[in-house]
Image 1 (cartoon, rainbow, N blue to C red):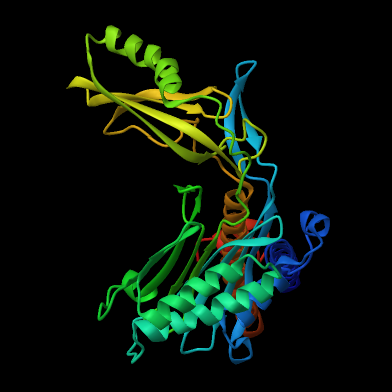
Image 2: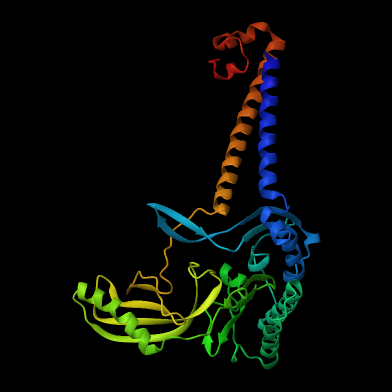
Length: 411
């Protein structure tokens, strides 16, 4: 009977060990994924190199654990085909890496996102609100050093311009510099103990310009914490201007857009009070033109109605300025999405599915471990009773003479 308990315990131990081994192989092995091999880089090793050189963390002082590594092509658009909702994946590979960095006294979590082998986003989570004598100019010196290291890390020369602008800002004590190609904007929060402000005490943001027009989003950004850690970096320099050609004028853009606004106005008894067309640049977010990283010139025409009905105050139409194609039109109100108008939905990406699998595996391991502990304790008690007196185990007969099933017997 006691031997039966031991066999069951061995089986459960083997099962738990198998689950743990599989979870470690899937989620914690810093090896090449199939996509990593195609891109010819090891994302885990590149992340550690980035943390050492750019962020400046002395990893030899800490215990470093890989918590997550996944590479996939994220969905960028949805469409209905044959009555089914179909996801259209990006042409680019995203690799998500997460490391735990701790030494007993401090604990940090580092997140890095690679796109086609290049760093796109980085952030560091932890406690950054400790006492510090560093000021704004100390932070900017740290950011400048990180930017120089990042240029060496990437091997790309176009960061030289960003380095020059930040160096000039430090020398001249300027917090904003605007040139023909870039806008540099520096913000600083002093003496704040709010976690977010401690984490991003100083932010350096670059906005790219082409022929006087701002490109969408931040071109490059780096943040430094209150106590001097590089806590964030954003690099969208992989986005590119596909064309500068303008085939339709402002008047033509208004003429193309006007029927959309007039039709909506007629439907709800509205009148167009004013209109404005603005030339700007926008990304091909849903990849309809082939690459969601490509940037094109566009006209955005906004029509304002004479009154607000159901929260709608106007109508917007977006037209690619190089082709004349209308790629977005919709009423504008409190809940409207202005910029793009593509279809959006919550999609369970591979990374989210991986997190759920990890949670499921952990739950199973905890449940089996609890069962194993209960069986072990019960069997130990049964063994002691058996050695003391045979009469003490008569209660086991209620469950077919098995010490394992005696767990469920009434003592």
